Image (cartoon, rainbow, N blue to C red; front, side, top):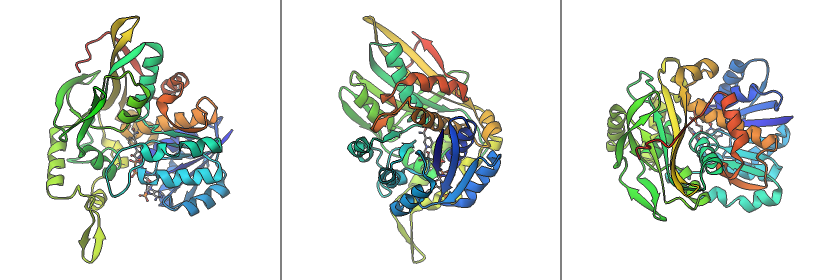
Length: 397
Ligand code: NDP
C-alpha cells in the first residue's frame, strides 16, 4: 500500500524500523537511510526477512535529499534523525511531493530553543502542495497530545489544567547516561523551566520547582517542572487552558552528574578551539557517553508517562489521569532497545499508519492533537503501548 522512507538509524530509528516492518499490509516497501549506512544495515539485518532496503544520505543537504527521494519515490518520510534536519527534510518533501512526519521540533544547532515557529511557517506551502506534515509524533511530544485530544473529545467540555508527567523508573546500571541522543537530551534538560498560567509563560530556574508525584505501579518519584515543546502547541490548540505544565523525574545521581557537566563547561554548545580545530563541548561529550540505543540489555524497570487533567464536564469539575507504562525489558525483547526509544518509535509508526491510511490526512502542517485521536488510540494498544484511565482521582498537582 505505501512506500515509506525512514531517515535516522539511532535508537528511535531502530524501533520505527522494527514496527513498520511488522505491518506489511500497510508498509509494503521500506527504505532506511542515515548518515552512516552501516548502522542502517545492522538494523535491517536485525529486522530480517529482506524487508528493509538501506541507503546513505546527508539529511542536511536538500539537493542530495531531493535526488534521493526522486529515486526512492516514497509516499512519506518518517524523520527520526535529529531536530537539526527537520527543515531540510521538509524542503525536500515539498520539492518532491512527499508527506512528512517527525518526533521533535526544529532547533537551530547554535541556540537551544524549542519552538514550533520555524515548522509552522511551512503550513501554507504544504497546504498548497496538498501534502500533510505531522509534527511531534513520538510519546512526548506525541501521545501526550493525542491523550489530551482524547480527553477533550470524550471526557470534558473544557480542559482547564493540564500536567504532563514523565517518569523513567528504570535502572540501566550505568553511572550516567541519557535515554536518547545525549546532545538533544542535555540541551533540553538544562534549559530554564517554563510553564503556561493565566495566559502567559512563566519562567523558572532549571529544576527550581519540584515535588514527589506517585506513578502507577512505581510509587513516588521526585518530579521536576521543565519546559517541553508540546506545551506550546497544546496551549494554542486548547485555548481554555488556564495552566499547562510538564514534569519529569530525575534521580539525584543524574542531577549531580548534570551539574558537574554544566559547571565544567561540557554542556556548552559554543564551539571551542581544541588543538587547532573547533569542537562543540556537548558534541564531544556525546561521543564519550554510553550510546542510549545500547542501554537496553541490562535496563530494568519501566517508564510511566501520562496526562493529569482537571476541567469541566456537564457544569461539574472533573479530574482525569490517562497514562501508559512501558517496561524496558519488554521493549528490549521485541526491538533490541530500551523503553524510551520504544515509546517514541511506536507512535511514529502509528502516526505514519494514520497518514498513509487516510485517517490523518489534511493538507498543511499539523500537531498531533489536531487530528481525530480515536483511531490512533486504538492502534496504541495493538502495537505495544496500552493505556489506562483513572477518573475523579487526586491528581497531586
Ligand atoms: P540518535 O542520535 O540515536 O540517532 C540519530 C540518527 O540520525 C543517527 O543515526 C544519526 O546518524 C542520524 N543523523 C544525524 N544527522 C544526520 C544527517 N545530517 N543526515 C542523516 N542522518 C543523520 O538519536 P535518537 O534515536 O535518540 O533520537 C532521534 C530523534 O527522536 C531525535 O530528534 C530526538 O529528539 C527524538 N526523540 C523524540 C522523543 C519523543 O517522545 N517525541 C523522545 C526521544 C527522542 P549517525 O549514526 O551517523 O550519527
